[in-house]
Image (tube, rainbow, N blue to C red):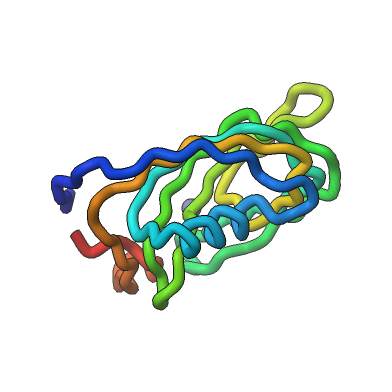
Length: 140
Ligand code: ZN
């Protein structure tokens, strides 16, 4: 395991805009506030969602789209830099009306309502291509 000590910096609470994309708003906020390293948690609801499932054998992401109202029961993610832009790596557990859940790497979702807590770190993290996984990971 590679690691690095970080110092906590600013903290934010945020309310996501109805009708806008869940992840894009986080990235826009990170760009506005010059955040280059952070973790966040969130909850709320979306009107639809697209998860990406990463096939570890093929090393490809496959989208799974759900056009239905979903409760964002839990969302966790981090913000770092990818190709010079803020990237919000976002995972979520979303529940359906009957209480069953969908979960995974959240690529996008149209916000019905959402609340976030963001903790910035006083450092920058830049993702780089990792040969083993073919993913963009943190070189620490
Ligand atoms: Zn992921």
